[in-house]
Amino acid sequence: MVTTVTSGIQVSVEVTYQAEFSSPHQHHFVFTYKVTIENKSNQTVQLMSRRWEISDAAEIKKIVEGDGVVGQQPVLEPGESHSYVSGCNLKSGLGKMKGVYFMEKLIDGSKFEVVIPEFQMIANYFYN
Image (cartoon, rainbow, N blue to C red; front, side, top):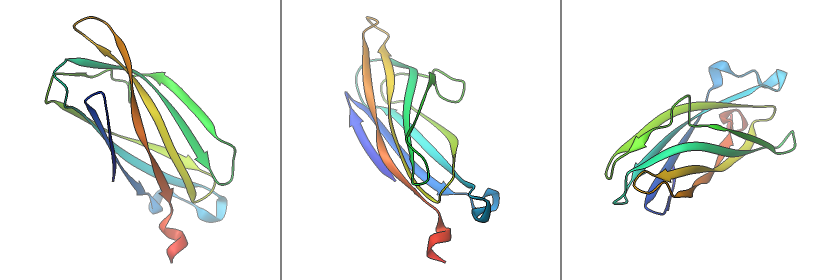
């Protein structure tokens, strides 16, 4: 698990290789990642959108942007957390992801960015 804190918002990511859904001989590797966002600040915040950079050893870097996370734009009161699980398909068994959440403070509408820490995606396949 990797964790970072930006402006009082803690982001932790845990990645899992999904061997049962992958086909290494067809260059198809599936990973899931669980993200936990915890508001350690004294402000109520809302996650508005995100931007991911996905690097695959077999391809050039991809940028993925969009509103919210898995269809939600969670509001986090101080001390609250939000977790979700998403996934990523790679053409190789080796890659990494990092990104940023675009957040808003509900008290005044000010916007700020929260770093999503870089994490590695390594297929267990390489260790067998």
